[in-house]
Length: 369
Ligand code: DAH
Image (cartoon, rainbow, N blue to C red; front, side, top):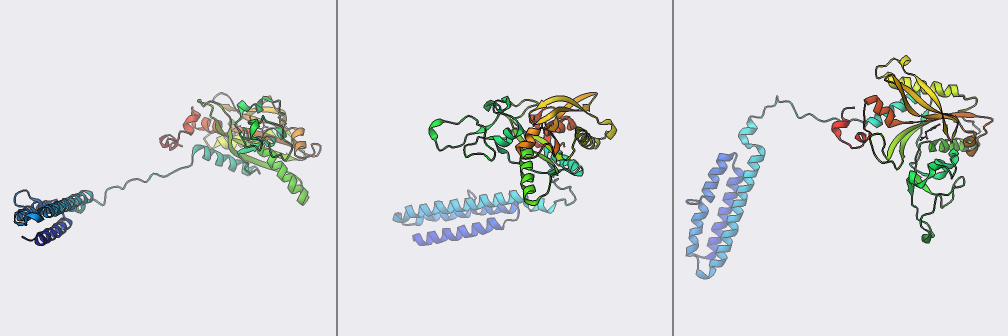
């Protein structure tokens, strides 16, 4: 037998087998096709293989090679057809598909509990006339400390208590410079840090308003809140995390007093917690004397909670030094400021006992809120 005839016979067999396998509509048809082409005893491939005995001796190696490759191709076609039927579940399974079965539920996403808290705080403060503004998370020490009346000697500026950024300097030999007080507006070598408090935004806003005042002749009032992330190198535990959120408030106008501060904070707390079923009248706040470099007098703010008092932040009348630092005349205007921890308020609201749960991003936990 001529080699060409043998090869032609194999090729046509491969084509037929391929057609039979791809055309098989179910497992039985596929099995029948397998027996027909690949059957060990009476399969058609076996029959063609027998013809190899009649091929010339010199052509035998080529004939053998062709036989092997065709055999492989037919086996592969069979595997593919098996896979296809398994995937579709076979025709029989398809026919019995029950369209009345309930579908696979789609999981609907939701806002993170901290984002929900922030949105709610903005909304309440908005109703009290405060607009929400943002400030940068990378700050210079003018806005984070200096303009807030926190001098270089103050422990809050310790490099171990802040995330200072190392900045490439032109003079590479000297290592990283220690924090230096920077002039207003800053020089090129001013230290940068991840802000440790949102009070920075007080300064940025007052500077901005003053710049606009000069341009337009308009006077303050400034009436803003700023909500965002702050960073401190605290070891994470149930109540500390190196990143958390604060809400900062600032009101500067003519004749602002401590009574305004207390009224605003009381109304804020009443609105915030009232929605959780409490009567507004049942929500009280109290002030305790305290100290912050940028307010005078300063207070710690507590809210009544489960028979006791819970501290929610600090507040006070804006220190005249701060007003002067941004170019305001403390004889003309006064103001109050407050800063509160967002996590603390959200955790008490939802009875969350470990701050780390908020940032592990386990959806089984987050989906509860
Ligand atoms: N910035 C303070 C802190 O992070 C909180 C604070 C206290 C903000 C008093 C204020 C304030 O605006 O008046 O601990």
